[in-house]
Each structure stands twice: as structure tokens, then as C-alpha cells.
Length: 414
Ligand code: ATP
Ligand code: MG
Image 1 (cartoon, rainbow, N blue to C red):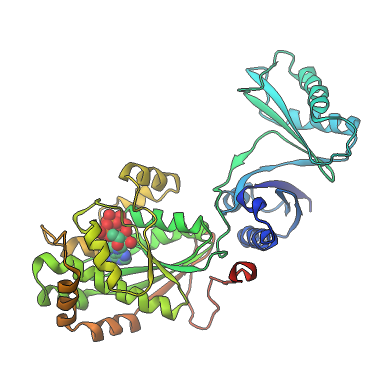
Image 2: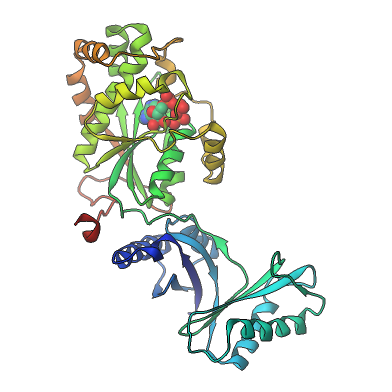
């Protein structure tokens, strides 16, 4: 059985000094996980990874693997030929015949000569190959600035030829920057918050607070759908579902109506912190954005911060709703997020929540609620779902090793 060759462009990773092998290895493994069970071979060159993938692995699966793995800047199918101009020209003719090149528009040849010993300069290679392009497409004019078609040539250990370059998600490979717990609601913001932190290499497990029957089974299904949609970017994830009905009712009957949202958030943070300790998380991640809703004022966030000793990361805090929505559309969570099932926060939230809480007063009110035991119970009764890196749900088993497969960068640690 034959193989297909893929060339992967790396960005920020290539700039890492001594840490580079660590990031490259992670990236390689993150991609490989998504190509299972097909056999593939990987080789590495400056700024590039090359994958030779079993032909029976569909192009869709390959596309999904490369387009959702952080650290990939761009990728393409490529062909390889010896570093000999006649052989290169012959191969270019073949590649052009199977490409989207046509007589319409303009073209350029972009040559990268990584092997400085190759006898021709990049300019000379481009000129010779431009003639080859014009043999097949005599009407095509050269345009260096804004070409319709591009023929890419890379002279390295071999010559690599390709005519497209698809975009990857950039960023750093997941599991190179520790683990965080993402508070995932059914809304637009939190999946985007998870995506953003994963793009900086953070491994994430998700936590959802579910108040059945005030929030329906459909609301839970929606959150599971969102977890599965972001799972490829997160390299697989876990969703911890915390039953929160009793706790919410307790909050409602033991606090002032305008405080319920604050108290709810304090309880969420405390439970999330306990789960973080249980699953080795170092930070909590939320989808809050400053002033987006009444509960997301600076004072409310400052209060929430006092309810946990864990780092709370709010990657969207300075983003506008339109920007967040655009990302949600790009990662295909938007349509799911706007399905109508209410999340528990909305159902219990008062018309006029306290927007300028006094930290000391609210902490005293929290203590007075006497809810800690109920929160421990919520942690104990948490139900967990696992999602593979391809988005599929798998049955959770306590004994099985976590999908996280967390490895701390030895060099970063020092
Ligand atoms: P989102 O669009 O992410 O739901 P939102 O604009 O609706 O956010 P809030 O409901 O105030 O804002 O929630 C702010 C953040 O708190 C969410 O982004 C999420 O991280 C967390 N959160 C809220 N409700 C829940 C929940 N039921 N389960 C888990 N996390 C939640
Ligand atoms: Mg919400």
C-alpha cells in the first residue's frame, strides 16, 4: 500500500531555542494521535515536519488532523523528487497536470533553497520552472505580488513540490503548558475561551454545572456537543458534569436576591478548585469578558478571585462580543452555542444583580450560607465524560489513564 506525503509548516515553535525538540515532539505526537489507526512516518527538518501517511487514511481525516492541531501554521500534500533540475522539471509537469493551475489569471514560483549547496540560486530555479509552467499554460502571466496560482519548491534533503498551502491554527502544541479546568457553559464565550488557552499549549478539562430539571437534558447534550466540537483542538478532553440543583436552591433560599449570581459564581469557583486539585489542574479558565453582562464587572471579578486561591484565567476579558462570535464561527461552535436551551446561571439570575459588591461583605454572606458540605457532595457526585481528539465520545472509566497524558517540559521547569 502506498503513502501520501504531507509537509507541515511550523511557526513559533521553530523560534524556540533549547526547548524546540520538546515542542516538536509534542506536536508530532498530537498529530499522530489524530491519524490513528493508520501507519505514518514522520521526519523533521528546519521549520518543517513531514508525514508519510498510509493511503487508506482519508484526506478528510488528514485535513482534520492538521487543521486542528495547535503548532501547525500551514500544511499541504507534497511530492518529493531528487535534487536534479531535469527530474524536478519532469515532476513539476506532473504536479501541474494534477493541480488547480489553469490558463486564467497569473502565477508565481516560490522557491525556498534550504540546501545552500544546491548549484542554482532560488531566483534561477524560479525562472527555469516558470518556463515549465508556461509550457503547459502559455497564457499565464507572472505576478509576484498577487498571483492566482503558486508553485512552491523547497530544496532540502530532497526537493519538495506543491501548489497549495492550507492554514493551520498556529499557536503552541497542547500539553506543553500545564493543565487548566475550563468552566464550560452552553454559551458562546466559554468554548472560545478554551480554544484560546489550548492555542497557548494548555491542556484542558471541562466542568459544567447542571441544574436538572431546571436545566433540561437538552442543555447537557448541548454542552456535550460543544465539548466534542472543541475536543480536536484540545487534543481530546474530559467533561465533568456537576449536578448543582440542590446547591442552587440552597443559594436561592439563603441569600439576597441581588446576590444570588455572585454566590453562584463563588460556589462554582470553589467546586472547580476542588476538581482542579483532584485532576492536577493549575488554573481555572472562564469565558468572562469585561462588562459583557451585569455579573462581569471589575468588582464582581475581583470578588470571584477572592473565593479561590487558584489562578483564574479569563482569556476573553478584553475582547468584544463580535470578535468572540467570529472565533466561535471559525471553530464551528457558534451554531451549537445559540441553540435555545438555558444554562443554570440564566435561570437563577436576578433582574438586577449586584454589580459593585463589597468583597468583605460578600465573603461574610457566603460564609453565612453554610453551603460547604453541599459543595463537597457535588464534587463527589460529579459524572465524567471523555472525548477523543477526533471529537468522538468514549466511555469514561476511572481506571483508565487520563486523555491528558500530561508531560511537563523539563527545560521550562528549570
Ligand atoms: P458563556 O457564553 O460562556 O455562557 P456568558 O456570557 O453567558 O458566558 P455567564 O453566564 O455570566 O456569561 O458566565 C460567565 C462564565 O462563567 C462562562 O463563560 C463560563 O466560563 C462560566 N459559567 C457560567 N455558567 C456556567 C455553567 N453552568 N457551567 C460551567 N461554567 C459556567
Ligand atoms: Mg452563559
